[in-house]
Length: 158
Image (cartoon, rainbow, N blue to C red):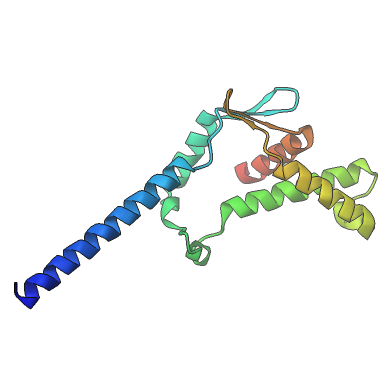
């Protein structure tokens, strides 16, 4: 067998193994993807939005070519804002400000440091709790988070 034939066989083997690894990784990513809830409800069971709303938002994003703006390496931030991070930041800020108003402060920044840290701990607990029920495909959020979601949604709609 000539050297050229051996090189072609080596190249074919390398490409075959590479594609098998990529297919295996793609399969794992697909199987471990986070669930998309059928509905998101507040603590009392009132529907905030549904899977149809999520899909409609995805269609709008894709109609602008948004799926082309990000990557696993994060270079999308060079071309467009990270809308997920922006939403989460606005939602967290709205929750903190709402709780501060509940404590008779004008805003979160007007509170003393100790009170701010207490509210930040409460925020972490609220946002990080896994409240997805796979049997009903429902995500339940607190009343405070539902109020923040409504405020952020109003911001994006305007």
